Image (spheres, rainbow, N blue to C red):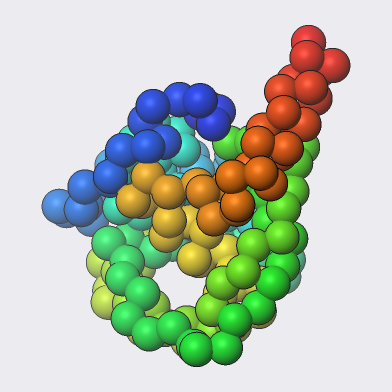
Length: 163
Ligand code: NI
């Protein structure tokens, strides 16, 4: 299991719903949490590891690890907020992204239980970022063309240095 980088086409696919929350999903989630820890990330969508199914995980600081299976964001606040965002599929660069401040999300848990969650702060942000991955949307898509170009060239430069 490894994280796909920004130029991988799978990241642009629309993920399909999870049909059955079974042991395979449990194993997948466990692997994803391991990967998230390894990369010290706060969220990861299955699409990012090449599995275009509608699920993602979050783990923010001391907050409990959360799995969101077949999620839908059913409400967003009119109030927007601006915060620096990055992505494990584009390591090393960050950009300020504007998003609704609070959201209400419905999903199934790793146990197959439906739940509704009102989120704010970083959790709301991470959920929205990961949710976008399920539709093949990346955070850079939310930038102006100029800012996106700048970020992409910075990323390319960093990639060369790392090699
Ligand atoms: Ni991401």
